[in-house]
Image (cartoon, rainbow, N blue to C red):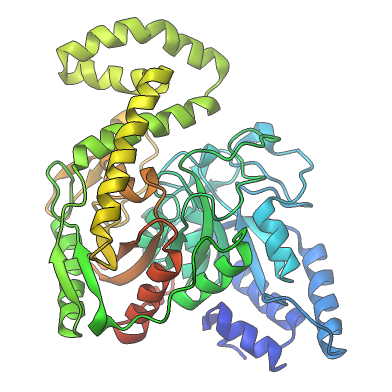
Length: 479
């Protein structure tokens, strides 16, 4: 079955259940695929093959005896290297964490309980802190659509492995678009769950041993189909937060299109793909109206402070102490604006007082109420994920980077946070769906944003889009 890896996870599981292929055979086919494209893509950066082969063999034996098995029985899968997995390094791209002996993260426990065969870890930027995927430990991960471009971050290795058919399911995470951006850049599916739906235990960062669930951060599934997202989420969720939605029919949907927002960058070639997709939705009977769910710049200002407050915990103590000493100077610089204000902004955000955090939290609470009202008359909101398609690798410091546009222009690098901010700040579910190729030949996706605890709704809409319009397209061999 040379084409087995072209199937999505559900298709591979059906082949296993009907014994058209064994778990051992499927694992070996997966490993051959990994070996064939690893030098070019560098997606899977650590493996535990002996344990995986033993597990696959045991599942085959249980299946032969007719014993009950889990929902993922025999499926080879990889996990982002921000999750602790027993027997594998858990570095989060950082040498200081490389030689720990971790126990399984909460999400990994659930996948193993469902009898998945976890054989490898996928690359991530240091402490999952970038929209590109590279680090000094494992090097750079390339986009299967174009090896000169990033697969996104921080779940970039996961998205690249999915697009290259090295894995059929992945567990990723998202605090700043880290599920949605890589899915968008690599043309695959991802689901950012409602905050709190999936356990963050064993996710690094924060530092190992932390028990508190991080604000904004979520753990979620990545795959090559909407049905696979639903399958893995059903395994990972800590308990249903809402009733399951019925299947969606495009001709019955009332959708908002959020594509116009003052101050939010969007390249023309990305806009063209999304507008074409929305036109196809309308032709199939969906009602689509243009909306502005919230004041975008006020959202980004509040979200940036909330996010920086979380990320400040990961800074070296000496660096944070220096920022605290510079806070007074930064407050003065902010008054002058321009370059001085730009220099001051990250310092002020990372050293925010509790009163400032409370003020930002109140802004997002009010925006959450606005969005709830919007979802009273709309099934979901469709929005861009990133302002550009996957861009060329750029490993300079953040301040030196920019996002190139199709017409030769540039957007600020930090404009990557704009479109993803609403779902993250307000704890909303958002399903990333590929919807076409841009003029430069790179994938473009959209995010389907739903009400809090409306995960099954956004996933049902994603399934309807995949069934009636299309979904994953295989990238050209060789990037």
